[in-house]
Image (cartoon, rainbow, N blue to C red; front, side, top):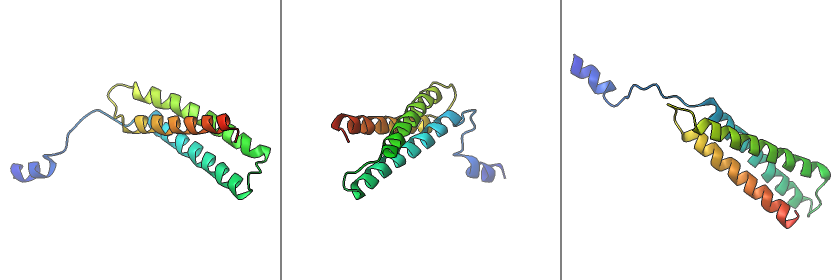
Length: 109
């Protein structure tokens, strides 16, 4: 009987590690910031280059969210006994958003 039970749970590892909440929030903020930045680019393209001031405000708020998400990702990464999938993914997504919006600012979009 014991061998039968162990065959089901033989590959499961009991651990105290958990997914940090800061890493999940980092990924969520990065996703929202990326979606809003891409939406602004799409709407500006549909308007043939005409971008109202509210589009600039949306990009600015996206940068603020990406910066906050980047900080949360770093804080989630330095937690002990935690999985690092979501914090690392959040750091990458937020960094991409910051680089893309920095490029928009550089080219004068």
